[in-house]
Length: 250
Image 1: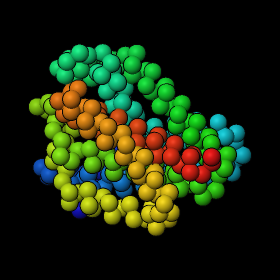
Image 2 (image 1 turned 90 degrees about the horizontal axis):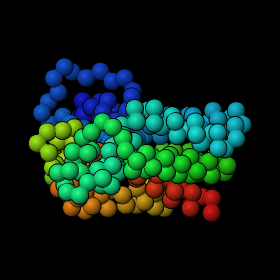
Image 3 (image 1 turned 90 degrees about the vertical axis):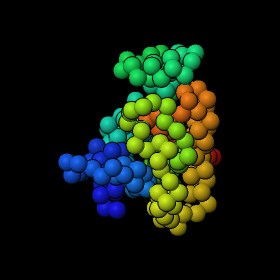
């Protein structure tokens, strides 16, 4: 179990985690149970960053840009890259085979650029609104968004199929079971204890992109790829923060 947690942290964050030279065959699958743990760690760093920018009395927009940049650095931009690839594939291909080929290309196209700009702008706007209010709602959202989005990503890998013979997502997609989801669900308990109503609403908002992609990607691509999982995480995070804005600032 400890190894699975370390794998999740190493896979989803830039944090230095020592792993054995050879991982067990089911190590990546079991690590899905600890995706929310990676979200908690990312949220902790974001909360620390938020405390610093509030202490420094930086303007809300500047603070939000710094926090969004910190979040991208903590994840190595892994999920942002997945979102861009998915949007390029969906926007530029007419068949599942062609879409998958476009997504495999390392170059980024117009659809990917536009999607990334809009996503980062929305994240910045949401965090700027939360920074203005500050206090408990800001720190709650910074923890809840990353954690809920990563649990939603794990649910997307459950009960779906991988459309390629090999690839990053092959170790997760279709292999994550209810046991991993249940264990990951236990990591949501502190969030619900903190603020059960807001926690459930943010979690529900973060789940929406995963539910949509479960059907959209299955039809358009023939299954769920690693890029789709990454896109689900990014979209889930911004939906969670948007829900927090509606809850705490409107």
